[in-house]
Picture 1 (tube, rainbow, N blue to C red):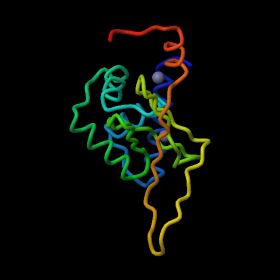
Picture 2: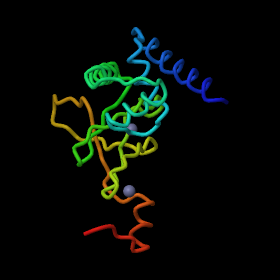
Picture 3: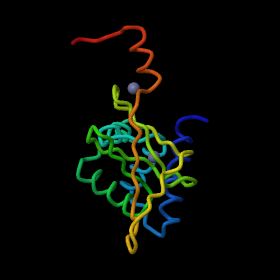
Length: 156
Ligand SMILES: [Zn+2]
Ligand SMILES: [Zn+2]
């Protein structure tokens, strides 16, 4: 598949999801959701902006991006993840596993969805209700394990 039709297909997937939620797909919403679908893993604001610039040859300002992401989160088309580095990351909802834990690499900061893992089911006191469960597994990714083993230490 050439790049042009790949982009068109992603855009239609973004559009399909927004319409399925009964909402109007504006250009900004499509661009952001498409970027998340393309990137496939949780990404920061900067990475989304970079991707949009690369694929659409136009920059999206921060306000539009923040507003678009808020909208997508609010309509359950995107989820927001915080790892302990305090950077917000976003990822398109995994339709099969909408809630799932995330892995965070303590060295390079990479965040990965773990859609096959179950979230713990907390036992709440009577009359309490769960709105959202977030779980982040902190560890070291395979790439960083290799760098440590080979003694490749950069700087102090
Ligand atoms: Zn890593
Ligand atoms: Zn995820």
